[in-house]
Length: 521
Image (cartoon, rainbow, N blue to C red; front, side, top):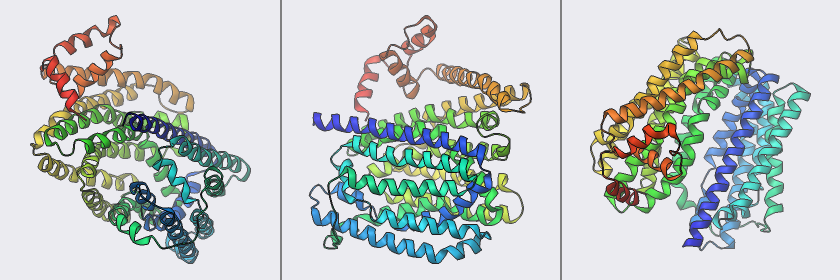
Protein backbone atom coordinates (compact mmCIF):
# COMPACT_ATOMS: atom_id res chain seq x y z
CA UNK A 1 0.00 0.00 0.00
CA UNK A 2 2.88 2.37 0.76
CA UNK A 3 4.36 1.66 -2.66
CA UNK A 4 0.97 2.33 -4.27
CA UNK A 5 0.61 5.59 -2.34
CA UNK A 6 4.08 6.70 -3.46
CA UNK A 7 3.21 5.95 -7.08
CA UNK A 8 -0.09 7.85 -6.87
CA UNK A 9 1.62 10.85 -5.26
CA UNK A 10 4.37 10.79 -7.87
CA UNK A 11 1.80 10.46 -10.64
CA UNK A 12 -0.18 13.40 -9.31
CA UNK A 13 2.98 15.50 -9.36
CA UNK A 14 3.73 14.51 -12.97
CA UNK A 15 0.16 15.27 -14.08
CA UNK A 16 0.14 18.63 -12.31
CA UNK A 17 3.45 19.38 -14.01
CA UNK A 18 1.99 18.44 -17.40
CA UNK A 19 -1.08 20.61 -16.86
CA UNK A 20 1.04 23.54 -15.74
CA UNK A 21 3.31 23.14 -18.78
CA UNK A 22 0.38 22.89 -21.18
CA UNK A 23 -1.33 25.95 -19.71
CA UNK A 24 1.90 27.94 -19.69
CA UNK A 25 2.71 27.04 -23.29
CA UNK A 26 -0.87 27.77 -24.28
CA UNK A 27 -0.71 31.20 -22.66
CA UNK A 28 2.63 32.02 -24.30
CA UNK A 29 1.28 30.85 -27.65
CA UNK A 30 -1.88 32.96 -27.28
CA UNK A 31 0.10 36.07 -26.33
CA UNK A 32 2.41 35.74 -29.33
CA UNK A 33 -0.30 34.78 -31.81
CA UNK A 34 -2.56 37.63 -30.67
CA UNK A 35 0.16 40.05 -31.78
CA UNK A 36 0.30 38.45 -35.24
CA UNK A 37 -3.26 37.30 -35.95
CA UNK A 38 -6.61 39.00 -35.41
CA UNK A 39 -9.77 37.82 -33.60
CA UNK A 40 -11.29 36.74 -36.92
CA UNK A 41 -8.51 34.18 -37.42
CA UNK A 42 -9.20 32.57 -34.04
CA UNK A 43 -12.93 32.67 -34.74
CA UNK A 44 -12.65 30.83 -38.06
CA UNK A 45 -10.76 27.96 -36.46
CA UNK A 46 -13.18 27.92 -33.52
CA UNK A 47 -16.08 27.52 -35.97
CA UNK A 48 -14.53 24.43 -37.52
CA UNK A 49 -13.42 23.13 -34.15
CA UNK A 50 -16.98 23.30 -32.81
CA UNK A 51 -18.00 20.71 -35.41
CA UNK A 52 -14.86 18.63 -34.85
CA UNK A 53 -15.39 18.66 -31.08
CA UNK A 54 -18.96 17.45 -31.59
CA UNK A 55 -17.72 14.42 -33.54
CA UNK A 56 -15.04 13.75 -30.92
CA UNK A 57 -17.57 14.03 -28.10
CA UNK A 58 -19.92 11.48 -29.66
CA UNK A 59 -17.02 9.05 -29.89
CA UNK A 60 -15.76 9.62 -26.34
CA UNK A 61 -16.88 6.18 -25.17
CA UNK A 62 -14.52 6.11 -22.21
CA UNK A 63 -12.78 2.99 -23.52
CA UNK A 64 -9.49 4.04 -21.95
CA UNK A 65 -11.21 4.39 -18.57
CA UNK A 66 -12.79 0.97 -19.00
CA UNK A 67 -9.36 -0.58 -19.64
CA UNK A 68 -7.88 1.20 -16.62
CA UNK A 69 -10.80 0.18 -14.41
CA UNK A 70 -10.61 -3.52 -15.43
CA UNK A 71 -7.46 -4.85 -13.80
CA UNK A 72 -7.99 -8.16 -15.64
CA UNK A 73 -8.21 -6.64 -19.12
CA UNK A 74 -6.55 -8.89 -21.69
CA UNK A 75 -4.98 -8.42 -25.10
CA UNK A 76 -8.29 -8.78 -26.95
CA UNK A 77 -9.80 -5.98 -24.85
CA UNK A 78 -7.05 -3.60 -25.94
CA UNK A 79 -7.42 -4.72 -29.57
CA UNK A 80 -11.17 -4.21 -29.36
CA UNK A 81 -10.80 -0.71 -27.90
CA UNK A 82 -8.36 0.24 -30.66
CA UNK A 83 -10.59 -1.23 -33.38
CA UNK A 84 -13.69 0.58 -32.10
CA UNK A 85 -11.79 3.84 -31.97
CA UNK A 86 -10.33 3.32 -35.46
CA UNK A 87 -13.75 2.57 -36.94
CA UNK A 88 -15.38 5.53 -35.22
CA UNK A 89 -12.63 8.04 -36.05
CA UNK A 90 -12.70 6.94 -39.70
CA UNK A 91 -16.46 7.39 -39.83
CA UNK A 92 -16.07 10.67 -37.96
CA UNK A 93 -13.59 11.90 -40.55
CA UNK A 94 -16.02 10.98 -43.31
CA UNK A 95 -18.84 12.77 -41.46
CA UNK A 96 -16.68 15.90 -41.18
CA UNK A 97 -15.93 15.82 -44.90
CA UNK A 98 -19.63 15.52 -45.74
CA UNK A 99 -20.60 18.20 -43.20
CA UNK A 100 -17.91 20.72 -44.20
CA UNK A 101 -19.94 22.57 -46.87
CA UNK A 102 -22.95 22.72 -44.55
CA UNK A 103 -20.83 24.12 -41.72
CA UNK A 104 -19.55 26.82 -44.04
CA UNK A 105 -23.13 27.64 -45.03
CA UNK A 106 -24.29 27.70 -41.41
CA UNK A 107 -21.57 30.15 -40.36
CA UNK A 108 -21.90 32.01 -43.69
CA UNK A 109 -18.16 31.85 -44.32
CA UNK A 110 -16.69 29.70 -47.11
CA UNK A 111 -13.26 29.55 -45.45
CA UNK A 112 -14.64 27.23 -42.77
CA UNK A 113 -15.04 24.38 -45.29
CA UNK A 114 -11.31 23.90 -45.91
CA UNK A 115 -10.55 24.08 -42.19
CA UNK A 116 -13.08 21.33 -41.48
CA UNK A 117 -11.37 19.15 -44.08
CA UNK A 118 -8.12 19.60 -42.16
CA UNK A 119 -9.82 18.57 -38.93
CA UNK A 120 -11.18 15.49 -40.74
CA UNK A 121 -7.57 14.48 -41.40
CA UNK A 122 -6.76 15.02 -37.71
CA UNK A 123 -9.72 12.85 -36.70
CA UNK A 124 -8.56 10.06 -39.03
CA UNK A 125 -5.02 10.16 -37.62
CA UNK A 126 -6.31 9.92 -34.05
CA UNK A 127 -7.97 6.62 -34.92
CA UNK A 128 -4.60 4.95 -35.50
CA UNK A 129 -3.03 6.10 -32.22
CA UNK A 130 -1.59 3.19 -30.24
CA UNK A 131 -4.03 2.07 -27.51
CA UNK A 132 -1.06 0.71 -25.59
CA UNK A 133 -0.33 4.14 -24.13
CA UNK A 134 -3.33 3.64 -21.82
CA UNK A 135 -0.93 1.46 -19.82
CA UNK A 136 0.98 4.61 -18.81
CA UNK A 137 -1.91 5.54 -16.51
CA UNK A 138 -3.02 2.03 -15.65
CA UNK A 139 0.47 1.02 -14.50
CA UNK A 140 1.03 4.43 -12.86
CA UNK A 141 4.02 5.22 -15.08
CA UNK A 142 3.00 8.87 -15.29
CA UNK A 143 6.45 10.02 -16.32
CA UNK A 144 5.82 8.54 -19.77
CA UNK A 145 2.36 10.11 -19.84
CA UNK A 146 4.02 13.46 -19.11
CA UNK A 147 6.58 13.00 -21.91
CA UNK A 148 3.83 12.00 -24.34
CA UNK A 149 1.76 15.09 -23.57
CA UNK A 150 4.86 17.28 -23.51
CA UNK A 151 5.89 16.18 -27.00
CA UNK A 152 2.47 16.83 -28.50
CA UNK A 153 2.02 20.25 -26.92
CA UNK A 154 5.55 21.53 -27.51
CA UNK A 155 5.54 20.53 -31.19
CA UNK A 156 2.14 22.13 -31.74
CA UNK A 157 3.19 25.42 -30.13
CA UNK A 158 6.47 25.62 -32.06
CA UNK A 159 4.86 24.91 -35.43
CA UNK A 160 1.90 27.23 -34.77
CA UNK A 161 4.10 30.19 -33.86
CA UNK A 162 6.53 29.56 -36.75
CA UNK A 163 3.69 29.27 -39.27
CA UNK A 164 2.02 32.39 -37.85
CA UNK A 165 5.12 34.44 -38.58
CA UNK A 166 5.44 32.88 -42.03
CA UNK A 167 1.81 32.71 -43.19
CA UNK A 168 0.23 35.55 -41.17
CA UNK A 169 -2.97 33.49 -41.38
CA UNK A 170 -5.39 31.30 -39.44
CA UNK A 171 -3.80 28.30 -41.16
CA UNK A 172 -1.03 28.51 -38.57
CA UNK A 173 -3.53 27.37 -35.91
CA UNK A 174 -4.72 24.51 -38.10
CA UNK A 175 -1.20 23.32 -38.94
CA UNK A 176 -0.32 23.37 -35.25
CA UNK A 177 -3.22 21.03 -34.47
CA UNK A 178 -2.27 18.75 -37.38
CA UNK A 179 1.31 18.61 -36.14
CA UNK A 180 0.13 17.62 -32.66
CA UNK A 181 -1.86 14.72 -34.17
CA UNK A 182 1.09 13.49 -36.25
CA UNK A 183 3.54 13.73 -33.35
CA UNK A 184 1.08 12.01 -31.01
CA UNK A 185 0.64 9.14 -33.46
CA UNK A 186 4.39 8.71 -33.82
CA UNK A 187 5.09 8.91 -30.10
CA UNK A 188 2.34 6.41 -29.25
CA UNK A 189 4.16 3.69 -31.19
CA UNK A 190 7.64 4.86 -30.32
CA UNK A 191 7.02 4.95 -26.56
CA UNK A 192 5.07 1.68 -26.13
CA UNK A 193 5.80 -1.74 -27.70
CA UNK A 194 2.14 -2.80 -27.96
CA UNK A 195 1.00 -3.32 -31.55
CA UNK A 196 -2.81 -3.41 -31.87
CA UNK A 197 -4.73 -5.75 -34.15
CA UNK A 198 -8.20 -5.58 -35.62
CA UNK A 199 -10.65 -7.30 -33.26
CA UNK A 200 -14.13 -6.77 -31.77
CA UNK A 201 -14.23 -9.83 -29.52
CA UNK A 202 -14.25 -7.86 -26.26
CA UNK A 203 -16.84 -5.21 -27.10
CA UNK A 204 -19.44 -6.39 -24.56
CA UNK A 205 -17.01 -5.87 -21.67
CA UNK A 206 -16.14 -2.33 -22.76
CA UNK A 207 -19.29 -0.64 -24.08
CA UNK A 208 -21.43 -1.12 -20.97
CA UNK A 209 -19.12 1.10 -18.92
CA UNK A 210 -19.50 4.13 -21.16
CA UNK A 211 -23.20 5.06 -20.93
CA UNK A 212 -23.01 7.75 -18.24
CA UNK A 213 -19.62 8.94 -19.49
CA UNK A 214 -21.16 9.61 -22.91
CA UNK A 215 -24.14 11.41 -21.34
CA UNK A 216 -21.91 13.62 -19.18
CA UNK A 217 -19.62 14.37 -22.13
CA UNK A 218 -22.59 15.39 -24.27
CA UNK A 219 -23.85 17.76 -21.59
CA UNK A 220 -20.38 19.24 -21.09
CA UNK A 221 -20.01 19.74 -24.84
CA UNK A 222 -23.23 21.72 -24.83
CA UNK A 223 -21.94 23.82 -21.96
CA UNK A 224 -18.44 24.35 -23.35
CA UNK A 225 -18.95 24.45 -27.12
CA UNK A 226 -22.66 25.07 -27.55
CA UNK A 227 -22.22 28.86 -27.36
CA UNK A 228 -19.69 28.67 -30.22
CA UNK A 229 -22.44 27.70 -32.64
CA UNK A 230 -24.66 30.58 -31.54
CA UNK A 231 -21.93 33.22 -31.33
CA UNK A 232 -20.34 32.11 -34.60
CA UNK A 233 -23.67 32.17 -36.42
CA UNK A 234 -24.89 35.53 -35.10
CA UNK A 235 -21.64 37.43 -34.44
CA UNK A 236 -19.32 36.01 -37.10
CA UNK A 237 -15.71 34.90 -36.91
CA UNK A 238 -14.44 38.05 -35.18
CA UNK A 239 -17.05 37.79 -32.41
CA UNK A 240 -16.40 34.10 -31.85
CA UNK A 241 -12.64 34.64 -31.81
CA UNK A 242 -12.97 37.32 -29.15
CA UNK A 243 -15.29 35.09 -27.11
CA UNK A 244 -12.99 32.05 -27.20
CA UNK A 245 -9.86 33.99 -26.24
CA UNK A 246 -11.75 35.83 -23.49
CA UNK A 247 -13.05 32.52 -22.14
CA UNK A 248 -9.59 30.96 -22.03
CA UNK A 249 -8.07 33.94 -20.22
CA UNK A 250 -10.98 34.49 -17.80
CA UNK A 251 -10.87 30.96 -16.38
CA UNK A 252 -7.08 30.77 -16.18
CA UNK A 253 -6.44 31.91 -12.57
CA UNK A 254 -9.32 30.04 -10.96
CA UNK A 255 -8.95 26.84 -12.99
CA UNK A 256 -5.22 26.53 -12.34
CA UNK A 257 -5.85 26.68 -8.59
CA UNK A 258 -9.12 24.76 -8.70
CA UNK A 259 -8.14 21.71 -10.78
CA UNK A 260 -5.22 20.48 -8.61
CA UNK A 261 -7.36 20.81 -5.48
CA UNK A 262 -10.14 18.79 -7.09
CA UNK A 263 -7.69 16.06 -8.09
CA UNK A 264 -6.78 15.68 -4.43
CA UNK A 265 -10.34 16.05 -3.11
CA UNK A 266 -12.02 13.32 -5.17
CA UNK A 267 -9.89 10.41 -3.89
CA UNK A 268 -10.42 11.70 -0.35
CA UNK A 269 -14.19 11.75 -0.79
CA UNK A 270 -14.14 8.28 -2.30
CA UNK A 271 -12.08 6.94 0.61
CA UNK A 272 -14.63 7.98 3.26
CA UNK A 273 -17.82 7.82 1.18
CA UNK A 274 -19.13 5.06 3.47
CA UNK A 275 -18.74 7.25 6.59
CA UNK A 276 -21.29 10.07 6.35
CA UNK A 277 -20.04 12.26 9.27
CA UNK A 278 -16.45 12.19 7.98
CA UNK A 279 -17.59 12.79 4.41
CA UNK A 280 -19.69 15.76 5.54
CA UNK A 281 -16.77 17.31 7.46
CA UNK A 282 -14.44 16.67 4.57
CA UNK A 283 -16.81 18.19 2.04
CA UNK A 284 -17.34 21.38 4.05
CA UNK A 285 -13.63 21.81 4.75
CA UNK A 286 -12.73 21.20 1.10
CA UNK A 287 -15.41 23.60 -0.13
CA UNK A 288 -14.17 26.24 2.29
CA UNK A 289 -10.57 25.81 1.13
CA UNK A 290 -11.52 25.89 -2.55
CA UNK A 291 -13.60 29.04 -2.06
CA UNK A 292 -10.89 30.71 0.02
CA UNK A 293 -8.25 30.22 -2.67
CA UNK A 294 -10.08 30.44 -5.98
CA UNK A 295 -12.95 32.93 -5.66
CA UNK A 296 -10.55 35.86 -5.05
CA UNK A 297 -8.50 34.73 -8.05
CA UNK A 298 -11.61 34.71 -10.25
CA UNK A 299 -12.97 38.06 -9.06
CA UNK A 300 -9.49 39.54 -9.11
CA UNK A 301 -9.46 38.91 -12.86
CA UNK A 302 -12.46 41.24 -13.15
CA UNK A 303 -10.42 44.05 -11.61
CA UNK A 304 -7.22 43.54 -13.64
CA UNK A 305 -8.70 42.46 -17.00
CA UNK A 306 -8.10 45.81 -18.73
CA UNK A 307 -4.39 46.25 -17.91
CA UNK A 308 -3.80 42.53 -18.48
CA UNK A 309 -5.16 42.69 -22.02
CA UNK A 310 -3.23 45.86 -22.79
CA UNK A 311 -0.04 44.16 -21.58
CA UNK A 312 -0.47 40.70 -23.08
CA UNK A 313 -2.58 41.03 -26.23
CA UNK A 314 -2.51 44.66 -27.25
CA UNK A 315 -4.92 47.20 -28.69
CA UNK A 316 -6.56 44.84 -31.22
CA UNK A 317 -8.08 42.79 -28.39
CA UNK A 318 -9.68 45.47 -26.22
CA UNK A 319 -13.09 44.07 -27.18
CA UNK A 320 -12.32 41.05 -24.98
CA UNK A 321 -12.07 43.10 -21.75
CA UNK A 322 -15.80 43.21 -20.84
CA UNK A 323 -16.16 39.57 -21.95
CA UNK A 324 -13.33 38.51 -19.65
CA UNK A 325 -14.89 40.38 -16.75
CA UNK A 326 -18.27 38.67 -17.15
CA UNK A 327 -16.72 35.24 -17.72
CA UNK A 328 -14.50 35.69 -14.66
CA UNK A 329 -17.66 36.25 -12.60
CA UNK A 330 -18.98 33.03 -14.15
CA UNK A 331 -15.83 31.26 -12.96
CA UNK A 332 -16.46 32.45 -9.41
CA UNK A 333 -20.01 31.07 -9.43
CA UNK A 334 -18.89 27.73 -10.87
CA UNK A 335 -16.31 27.30 -8.14
CA UNK A 336 -19.24 26.91 -5.76
CA UNK A 337 -20.57 24.15 -8.04
CA UNK A 338 -17.40 22.16 -8.73
CA UNK A 339 -16.77 20.54 -5.35
CA UNK A 340 -20.30 19.15 -5.55
CA UNK A 341 -19.43 17.24 -8.71
CA UNK A 342 -16.55 15.47 -6.95
CA UNK A 343 -19.00 14.49 -4.23
CA UNK A 344 -21.50 13.04 -6.72
CA UNK A 345 -18.79 10.93 -8.33
CA UNK A 346 -17.56 9.66 -4.94
CA UNK A 347 -21.14 8.72 -3.97
CA UNK A 348 -21.49 6.78 -7.25
CA UNK A 349 -24.13 9.18 -8.53
CA UNK A 350 -22.40 10.40 -11.72
CA UNK A 351 -25.71 11.11 -13.44
CA UNK A 352 -26.23 14.18 -11.26
CA UNK A 353 -23.16 15.74 -12.87
CA UNK A 354 -24.70 15.45 -16.34
CA UNK A 355 -28.16 16.50 -15.13
CA UNK A 356 -26.89 19.77 -13.66
CA UNK A 357 -24.71 20.54 -16.68
CA UNK A 358 -27.63 19.79 -19.02
CA UNK A 359 -29.90 22.11 -17.00
CA UNK A 360 -27.24 24.82 -17.34
CA UNK A 361 -27.20 24.29 -21.12
CA UNK A 362 -30.99 24.44 -21.42
CA UNK A 363 -31.02 27.82 -19.67
CA UNK A 364 -27.90 29.33 -21.24
CA UNK A 365 -28.21 28.56 -24.95
CA UNK A 366 -31.79 29.77 -25.57
CA UNK A 367 -31.20 32.92 -23.52
CA UNK A 368 -27.88 33.65 -25.23
CA UNK A 369 -29.42 33.08 -28.65
CA UNK A 370 -32.30 35.43 -27.90
CA UNK A 371 -30.06 38.21 -26.57
CA UNK A 372 -27.81 38.06 -29.63
CA UNK A 373 -30.75 37.78 -32.06
CA UNK A 374 -32.44 40.78 -30.38
CA UNK A 375 -29.30 42.87 -30.87
CA UNK A 376 -28.15 43.25 -27.28
CA UNK A 377 -24.59 42.34 -28.24
CA UNK A 378 -22.11 39.73 -27.09
CA UNK A 379 -21.18 41.56 -23.87
CA UNK A 380 -24.77 41.27 -22.65
CA UNK A 381 -25.34 37.80 -24.09
CA UNK A 382 -22.53 36.18 -22.09
CA UNK A 383 -24.37 37.13 -18.91
CA UNK A 384 -26.72 34.25 -19.77
CA UNK A 385 -24.00 31.87 -18.56
CA UNK A 386 -23.75 33.68 -15.22
CA UNK A 387 -27.52 33.70 -14.84
CA UNK A 388 -27.80 29.96 -15.45
CA UNK A 389 -24.97 29.13 -13.05
CA UNK A 390 -26.43 31.35 -10.33
CA UNK A 391 -29.98 29.99 -10.71
CA UNK A 392 -28.81 26.38 -10.36
CA UNK A 393 -26.56 26.99 -7.36
CA UNK A 394 -29.24 26.82 -4.61
CA UNK A 395 -30.70 23.62 -6.08
CA UNK A 396 -27.27 22.03 -5.98
CA UNK A 397 -26.76 23.09 -2.39
CA UNK A 398 -30.11 21.60 -1.41
CA UNK A 399 -29.26 18.32 -3.12
CA UNK A 400 -25.87 18.11 -1.40
CA UNK A 401 -27.52 18.93 1.93
CA UNK A 402 -29.90 16.04 1.32
CA UNK A 403 -27.16 13.54 0.49
CA UNK A 404 -24.96 14.64 3.42
CA UNK A 405 -27.87 15.08 5.83
CA UNK A 406 -26.97 18.64 6.74
CA UNK A 407 -28.62 22.04 6.53
CA UNK A 408 -28.01 24.44 3.65
CA UNK A 409 -26.76 27.06 6.11
CA UNK A 410 -23.81 24.76 6.88
CA UNK A 411 -22.67 25.20 3.28
CA UNK A 412 -23.05 28.97 3.24
CA UNK A 413 -21.28 29.21 6.62
CA UNK A 414 -18.00 28.04 5.05
CA UNK A 415 -18.16 30.18 1.89
CA UNK A 416 -19.64 33.56 2.84
CA UNK A 417 -16.48 35.05 4.39
CA UNK A 418 -14.20 34.39 1.37
CA UNK A 419 -16.94 35.58 -0.98
CA UNK A 420 -17.53 38.77 1.04
CA UNK A 421 -13.80 39.49 1.29
CA UNK A 422 -13.41 38.89 -2.46
CA UNK A 423 -16.24 41.31 -3.27
CA UNK A 424 -14.62 43.93 -1.03
CA UNK A 425 -11.32 43.34 -2.83
CA UNK A 426 -13.02 43.78 -6.19
CA UNK A 427 -14.51 47.09 -5.09
CA UNK A 428 -11.09 48.36 -3.99
CA UNK A 429 -9.50 47.16 -7.25
CA UNK A 430 -12.06 48.97 -9.38
CA UNK A 431 -11.73 52.14 -7.31
CA UNK A 432 -7.93 52.04 -7.46
CA UNK A 433 -8.00 51.37 -11.21
CA UNK A 434 -10.14 54.47 -11.79
CA UNK A 435 -7.64 56.56 -9.83
CA UNK A 436 -4.68 55.42 -11.94
CA UNK A 437 -3.62 57.08 -15.23
CA UNK A 438 -5.56 56.12 -18.34
CA UNK A 439 -4.58 52.91 -20.11
CA UNK A 440 -3.12 53.71 -23.52
CA UNK A 441 -0.23 51.27 -23.95
CA UNK A 442 1.32 47.99 -22.83
CA UNK A 443 3.66 49.90 -20.54
CA UNK A 444 0.69 51.52 -18.81
CA UNK A 445 -0.86 48.07 -18.45
CA UNK A 446 2.26 46.82 -16.68
CA UNK A 447 2.21 49.81 -14.29
CA UNK A 448 -1.46 49.21 -13.49
CA UNK A 449 -0.83 45.54 -12.74
CA UNK A 450 2.13 46.36 -10.48
CA UNK A 451 -0.16 48.63 -8.48
CA UNK A 452 -3.35 46.57 -8.51
CA UNK A 453 -2.08 43.07 -7.69
CA UNK A 454 -0.50 43.96 -4.30
CA UNK A 455 -3.51 46.10 -3.39
CA UNK A 456 -5.87 43.25 -4.23
CA UNK A 457 -3.91 40.63 -2.27
CA UNK A 458 -3.62 42.85 0.79
CA UNK A 459 -7.29 43.89 0.71
CA UNK A 460 -8.50 40.31 0.45
CA UNK A 461 -6.20 39.03 3.21
CA UNK A 462 -7.13 41.83 5.61
CA UNK A 463 -10.84 41.51 4.85
CA UNK A 464 -10.85 37.73 5.27
CA UNK A 465 -8.93 37.82 8.56
CA UNK A 466 -11.15 40.62 9.89
CA UNK A 467 -14.35 38.71 9.09
CA UNK A 468 -12.94 35.51 10.59
CA UNK A 469 -11.94 37.30 13.79
CA UNK A 470 -15.28 39.12 14.01
CA UNK A 471 -17.13 35.79 13.87
CA UNK A 472 -15.08 34.29 16.71
CA UNK A 473 -12.36 32.52 14.70
CA UNK A 474 -14.44 29.39 14.01
CA UNK A 475 -12.70 26.19 12.88
CA UNK A 476 -12.74 25.69 9.13
CA UNK A 477 -10.82 26.73 6.06
CA UNK A 478 -9.21 29.84 7.60
CA UNK A 479 -8.06 27.94 10.68
CA UNK A 480 -6.78 25.06 8.57
CA UNK A 481 -4.91 27.43 6.25
CA UNK A 482 -3.20 29.06 9.25
CA UNK A 483 -2.33 25.65 10.69
CA UNK A 484 -0.76 24.57 7.40
CA UNK A 485 1.20 27.82 7.17
CA UNK A 486 2.38 27.39 10.76
CA UNK A 487 3.41 23.76 10.16
CA UNK A 488 5.58 24.91 7.25
CA UNK A 489 7.22 27.66 9.28
CA UNK A 490 5.58 30.51 7.38
CA UNK A 491 4.39 32.29 10.53
CA UNK A 492 7.75 32.61 12.27
CA UNK A 493 8.61 36.12 11.14
CA UNK A 494 7.70 39.20 13.21
CA UNK A 495 5.13 40.45 10.72
CA UNK A 496 3.16 37.22 11.15
CA UNK A 497 2.58 37.76 14.90
CA UNK A 498 -1.09 38.81 14.40
CA UNK A 499 -1.72 35.59 12.47
CA UNK A 500 -0.07 33.48 15.19
CA UNK A 501 -2.27 35.25 17.72
CA UNK A 502 -5.39 34.51 15.69
CA UNK A 503 -4.39 30.87 15.46
CA UNK A 504 -4.48 30.64 19.24
CA UNK A 505 -7.92 32.28 19.32
CA UNK A 506 -9.62 29.58 17.25
CA UNK A 507 -12.85 28.74 19.02
CA UNK A 508 -12.29 24.95 18.94
CA UNK A 509 -9.54 23.57 21.20
CA UNK A 510 -6.34 22.55 19.47
CA UNK A 511 -6.86 18.89 20.27
CA UNK A 512 -10.31 18.81 18.71
CA UNK A 513 -9.01 20.55 15.60
CA UNK A 514 -6.31 17.91 15.29
CA UNK A 515 -8.87 15.15 15.67
CA UNK A 516 -11.08 16.76 13.05
CA UNK A 517 -8.15 17.07 10.70
CA UNK A 518 -7.37 13.39 11.07
CA UNK A 519 -10.99 12.49 10.41
CA UNK A 520 -11.16 14.57 7.25
CA UNK A 521 -10.18 13.18 3.86
